[in-house]
Image 1 (cartoon, protein in one colour):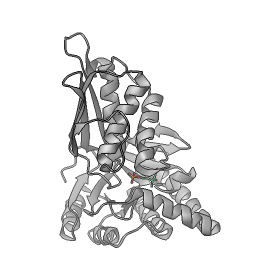
Image 2 (image 1 turned 45 degrees about the horizontal axis):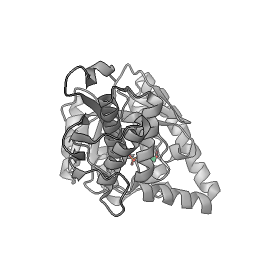
Image 3 (image 1 turned 60 degrees about the vertical axis):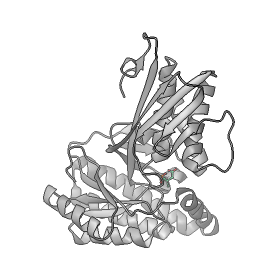
Image 4 (image 1 turned 180 degrees about the horizontal axis):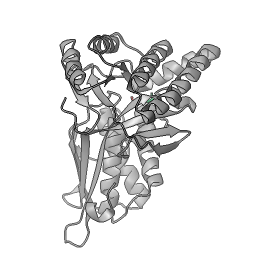
Length: 328
Ligand code: PMV
């Protein structure tokens, strides 16, 4: 993150505040992270958002890729989720600042496909809260930012682990465990791709499904969560040692664990199988599951290009590189 001065214009007649966030993908540990197990997440810099806030116009106005209109002062039911989330971010940030401006104009540009396990709701909330706070000359502490994003994430999917709130604002891969995000410094940056099935994921439903399974068969689910923890820990070692084929095998194991937890989907499997056939070192679903996105690990640049082709041929609606400098 930059310093406040990069994002504010305070000494002009027309102050503005800016906030930037990006998409994230979970390499290992989704779902088990909800049960206090560790997870690894990467920033996806190719998918980002920028919010800009100004005091202008009449009332509180919001323009995002999904909604343009007024921000109501109190929550209103039965609106599209994307609108509710963006409005909640504006309202909760103003409440934290103790501000009730007569006019406010917030614009969000950029694109992170919603409901794909890429952290879109956390990224929208993070960008808006940074911009609105900076407009007021306030640089939120990381704790304040975290709590604001979590307040929006709770509206999006009930009991968020907090992983998305960190992963969409941190510029580096993170190890997330028991609410603490630690940056992972890597000598070898893995060639990871994210591919979209084109169908919405259902994080809230998937999280409740795992919860129901846990309640009805605690022993079996505890075994799966223990497996997921081991995979995340071995995955961190493999990442730090640059052991790509070990990391790939662990991703394959993680995909099997997620399927056993019941959050898989046939269309995710089609993409995972295609990636493995095309030479991926490993592949798995990422995020909440039941749709959304998968990730694939390429052993080298040539295979990476083949993966993009193979994934597109079997129906991926988009493929994005996770690592910087990717040409997918
Ligand atoms: O689908 P996403 O990007 O919201 O990721 C959800 C990750 C889960 O572990 C399933 C839930 C959570 O709160 O961590």
